[in-house]
Length: 162
Image 1 (cartoon, rainbow, N blue to C red):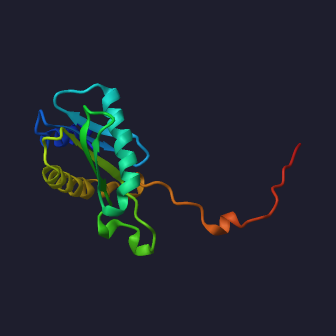
Image 2 (tube, rainbow, N blue to C red):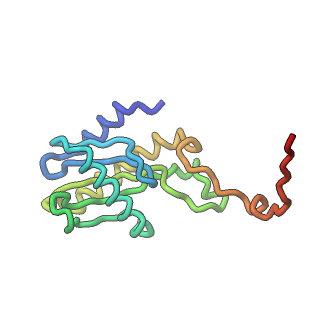
Image 3 (tube, one colour):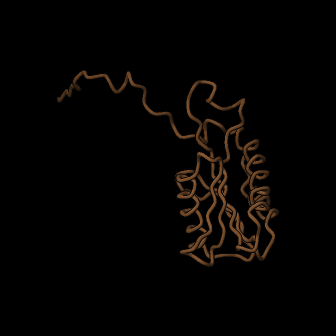
């Protein structure tokens, strides 16, 4: 079972307040799973990090991670996003399908924190979470797209009224 209190504690442990202050775990669709910040931040600010990190991921996923210096939201600072992937032995890549992340991990810090520090911590935490979350594999992935045989079925629907 996934213990959210344990997950929250794990996220809190990698923070280095006040400069590396927030870490967020969310789905690729933008659903918040867990967040930790020190000092505590309003939920609206956490949701801004979720939204921005989702956009960063969509634009930069080919590189394996994404990062942005947030100029529009000066108080947000640096955001770096990592995919939490199924472990290789559990993935469907061997079946020829493109892998999508199970979750996205976003780290948020001021511009005084080096990108390398954020990258190292994010990579380690994403790998650890991947091992733990891969146990839930099919439960966490989005359902597969309908097969082409379903799409090509052109038989009319019949409605029976009594």
